[in-house]
Amino acid sequence: MYSLLLAIIYIAFISLGLPDSLIGSAWPVMHQELQVSVSYAGIITMTIAGGTIVSSLFSDKLTRKFGAGLVTALSVLTTAIALFGFSISTHFLALVLWAIPYGLGAGAVDAALNNYVALHYTSRHMNWLHCFWGVGAAISPYIMSFYLTNGQSWNNGYRTIGILQLILTAVLFFSLPLWKRQKDTYTSDSTTKALSFSEILKLKGIWAILIAFFAYSAVEQTTGLWASTFLVTAKNIHPDIAARFAAFFFLGITFGRFICGFIADRLGDKQLIRVGTGIILIGLLFILLPSSQTFWALSGLIIVGVGCAPIYPSIIHATPTNFGKEYSQSVIGIQMAFAYVGTTFVPPFFGWLASVTSLAIYPFFLAFFALLMLFSTERLNQLLKG
Image 1 (tube, rainbow, N blue to C red):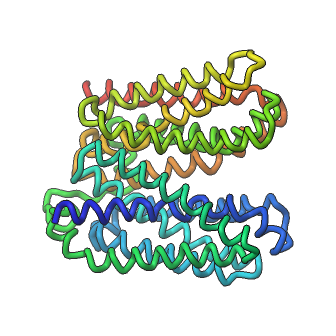
Image 2 (cartoon, helix red, strand yellow):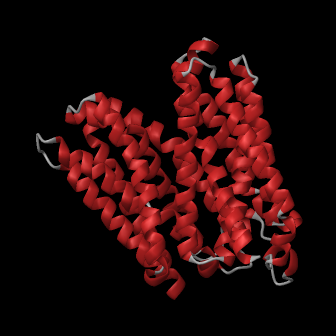
Image 3 (cartoon, rainbow, N blue to C red):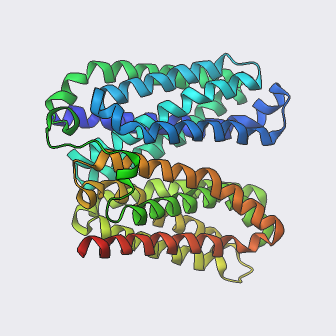
């Protein structure tokens, strides 16, 4: 039963990644058909982000009341319904409205599933599970591309992903007895404690880890979003090559998490965060090298992706150890909320900052947040020792 539930959770992580890259891959066609500006994609993504922040903050209450298995199943169902809503939409306003349940479902399942894994499985599985998220995020653009290159509508791409989510929903509902047999802290353990937001924010070391999660998410999202533009503008790299290596950044994260799975239990979460940050800084040094050869900048981008790989899973997996099993769902929910704030607001802020200065600040900007993340995690370690 342990192995069967673990396999279902792996599939669920693929599901988490499936919707995440759909808008980016389809928007060049979508905005033309909907007759809106290309910049309107930001309205949809901000709406989704708002939903994920809200549902992350309330994930603790939901998980305590319904259990991790049911919350996961209902959240995936909500996301599937939203995807079907996207598939029948013919007006931009309809997309914005469907983006609300899209975000609410994504945030709840993300927090509930990550906490369940942190409580019941090893660091190795946490890294591999997040690797499977990358598999899902990589699959959906290919599905969308299949329809677009064959002269079909982007609506079909959303419909197909929605069908896959519905199939997973059915699997999750059938698997609910397995979740109950695996000890669920939030339905069977009387020592668990519900915390208000103000109580969570008073936990020892909480602000250090929230800043760390915010900073890491800022690094990952800003790197991926602005990589191509930086390579073309600051390094004079051909747009086709730049776009390919920007995608390699995410492949670096996925591959890095696969490799980290083999060493995670041996090194431990704290050491993985340190090693990952060091690799990020090495990658940024490669990008900074004033060489006319494109090899260094392109290689540096991949290295940054590999460095990012273990950090997010390690922060999540260490939460029960750092703050206690009884508080982990509360803490992971608010950690996720801060992560979404970082991914939502920092990349546009960099765009504004680069517009008034220069895109050449890209590696320095990323290094600042990487060091802020490392300083915050080390500060947490000191506080918990004291």
